[in-house]
Image 1 (cartoon, rainbow, N blue to C red):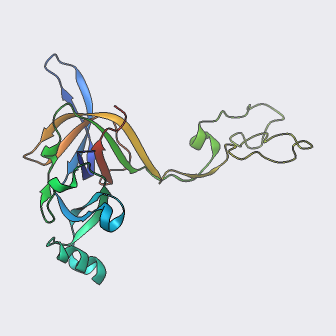
Image 2 (image 1 turned 90 degrees about the horizontal axis):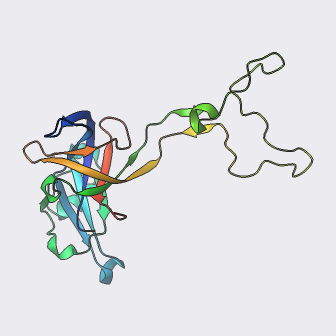
Image 3 (image 1 turned 180 degrees about the horizontal axis):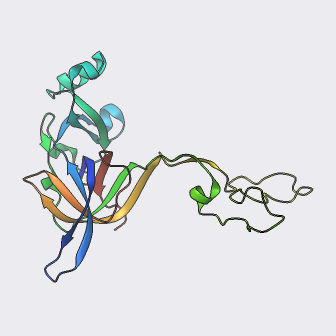
Length: 210
């Protein structure tokens, strides 16, 4: 991997191509990210670069976090994330990475935290069908229904679609396209939707399964 950055999802809009086609895009504020730490095979067992994103008050961080950032000569950052770049020698501690590392037409993967829906039923969570709304069925028509035979196997198999916590988990969408890189506003316009709510943190990397 040669390209990666931390960003903030700002929302969705649309752009028009030269032939008049409409492309739905997600606007992501990508960086600037500071290089906080470089990890090497000799010292840490693997190669990686730690990036910091979004300035925050020093009072929001504890002393170990502040010391870690001050050692790199970086101001207080809210988000830290490691990326396993192929060539870590091209990064200098304290330097900045901006959205211009990407170009129009790049294929990327975007990771974020999906919207949380709390405890949800099977219709909302798994797109299950309703029960029949006729006499003798109910009184609940949105419940799971039959869970399996009672005498054999006398249990519910693991993985059965059940009510439960829906959303609020890490989701990665593969092979999205960068429609436009706006270096003046430091934003990326990414074709389609990316995970998470507005103002959520997202991690953008070069696609691994092009």
